[in-house]
Amino acid sequence: MKANVDKDTCIGCGLCPSICPEVFEMDDDGLAHTIVDAVPDSVEDEAKEAEESCPVNAITVG
Image (cartoon, rainbow, N blue to C red; front, top):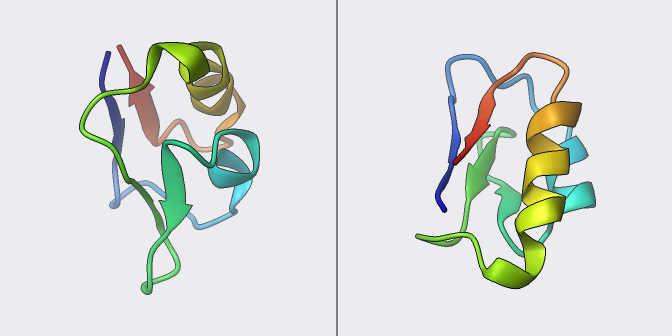
């Protein structure tokens, strides 16, 4: 499973790393990005929660 953040859509709210810090973090530009190539099995639910919680639908997990 992979996760992706669309930087053109991201507004930098910080919700995704607060939900799943194992996969997402905030970059120097104030926008979120992924920090892993593949979502670890142990945090798949949290990554999906981050996707569903993103207010601008900038995250895809699948």
